[in-house]
Image (tube, rainbow, N blue to C red; front, side, top):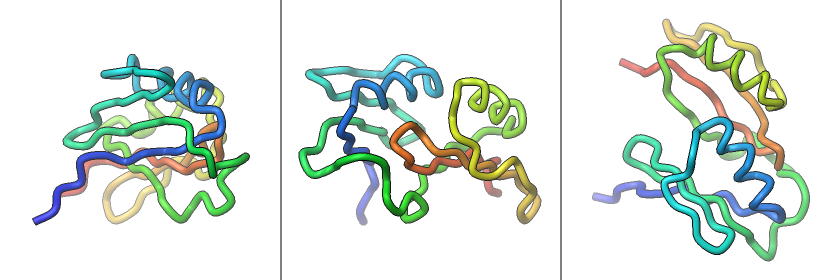
Length: 116
């Protein structure tokens, strides 16, 4: 069985992108030579420079990061105040809540209530 241990976001400006995620997720669990990593559940989110990434995400809805929280609405307001671009305000879906943002590189991420 395969286990997802990390997701990497390649960026032309990893330091700027990491500064945004520091505001959202807090201090990284590790930093090394322009690379950053946050433990999120059983998976790490890594940010680093990628030589073939230029500008903003061209299809940001292709891969969406989902962060679980029981406080979707209050976390939505907090992240909105941090300057994240709101893609979709909190809405109810199958008894849970979802909200969608774009980070400074244009990548989409969502807040979702835990699924039963």
